[in-house]
Image (cartoon, helix red, strand yellow):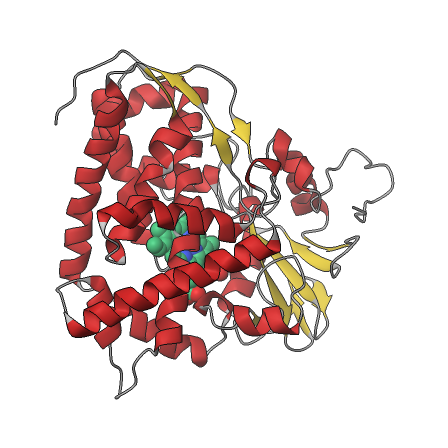
Length: 413
Ligand code: HEM
């Protein structure tokens, strides 16, 4: 719980405490650190102390330099993994360093051909249509549960070739594996482990099927992807499936939820989007900047180095606060304002353009654009009908529930 705080600044929020984030992102605290100590030493009651990096330039610098700021050495989460856990995490591309990471990323990227991306885009369009159809006659909904959560799940299941009737399984596994600090979603470590085993077994059966009956889909392309005679083995395929189920799910869901809430809080911006649809593209980027669902990732320094003016020693933990970098006043004009027509908008919600830059960035953008396109078109008077309930986490900036009302409409079928 302890946090290093300069004398006289007791009102600063504790960034280690998930409860801090239930009330919203502690923007004033981040602004304080950006102005006074952009790379500051932060104590932690149970985990390693770490450097909190809060300014844009420093986050980007560390993000780009995977040789000095390793994802592999100590994992990318604030919690310290034990040896066994670290070995398991090492199977995820997110937790690999080059050159292992470079090989893996090259192989999985081969599966996303322009045709597959186009097919997925059409699928997203059909899905958003169906999702709005499912609630449009009701006149009220929980925007998170009924809209924001549905789309990413359907898209991941489609990507991995999961048949329609099994899609609820992906929902269940990803929820159990993420294992949140929020009491509403809490799971035991055993349950999370079982979910992973079930997911691996399921993915293995899908892979076995595609080997016998190849199709023109992403899973078959992943199985066959080859670089210099090298292919992904079964464990790598299963782990990739698991990463997609986790990385593409909560992130996109929460971004969509934040995006809607930002429009409620800024009715002029909402009106702008209603009347100038061409603003949806920059509007999505602004939702990403202001929403920033992945609040931070951690790195471990592989040698003595400097970040800004701060000396970092080999082995030090370094937490990159994307959420703070995206509000850096040196980089964004009036960063606390939500402006759907903000350009340029070089936010780093998907990471700072380093080797781990989000693999699903364009897919996520397409999901967000299609969903808001449909909502603007068919629910033009959508309004907030209750307070948003925020996720208890200092890792994912989330909204669990957001009650909304709108004039009921007809299904389009
Ligand atoms: C709004 C939605 C999303 C956000 C904000 C987001 C954010 C991020 C961030 C911050 C990273 C790490 C970047 C870094 O450390 O440099 C990342 C990596 C990743 N994301 Fe996303 N993501 C989103 C959606 C998705 C989707 C839809 C997928 C796929 C279905 C996906 C798959 C991945 C994968 C596989 C990686 C690891 C890439 C690597 O290690 O090379 N993400 N994402």
